[in-house]
Image (cartoon, rainbow, N blue to C red; front, side, top):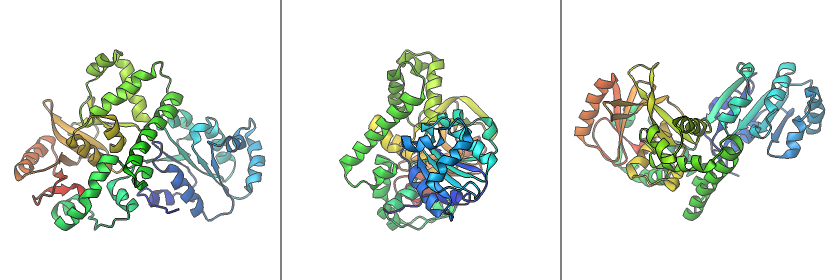
Length: 394
């Protein structure tokens, strides 16, 4: 089986021999199991074991009232208590008691834990504040475009800065890569979808990923009385990708209280199904609470669940490339969306399927209003205009 490297790997590899527990979380089917198996093979020790907590026999190893008794179970997996042990636990949401067990073994031995879980909503409830100094949490998302190209075995010349991306454009490279960008935006970045070659099976997999999320996360982790309402909310959100949410209108359409809509949104965000962007205020420390913009976790899911325009889908694709690396917000003045994304409160990006020199000048004026010194247009069509970054260079 071919292993495709992910951008997060170097950061995880640096933690192989540190003392803290490592928790890798994110949406279902983004590749967490593949990564934890890779890390397991990388550890240079024979005193290690990997457990799949979806397997009831593996769960039983840790289901002891006396946590010291867990060591007797680990012996059957060739784990020695007297040496430093490396314990890998996949899908920890299947065993609610595991954080307490891990904390005890961590505090009373040299044990190093690596864990994966599918929902930050659940993991936040599992891991108490007493674990805060013992764990480091990493988040994994569907593929960025650069990772997508690696999975497709397509090479490209990468540029280090946004300024170089805007300056050093190449039409031949663009023509080579644009079909891949279009596929990426239409079908998204879930690894198994990207690797599947048959178009119909890609769509079947996307439907199955959503069904799995709804059946296994929404139904089992959420305590909602009427699941049809949260399903209907998801469909409404899919249509509104890239738009500001009107809670009053959503509440009216769904015949739900605003408080219930907020609770649903909080769950969907905390389980990685949606992301909500706050408004930029000119201060990196201040965000306006209301009027957040919404994006789904993946453009492929957005495409099968919603009725969206090419512009919406393109903007969502750009968002998914920025999401892992930047704290994002948007700029809005007097009710009109002015700058689509602001990265780390410093760099503005306006997303257009095609751009002109006039729009570049317009962005410069908006940057002054937003108090930004650096900003770019991002285009899906080739443009030689200065200050424009091509989607294929993201």
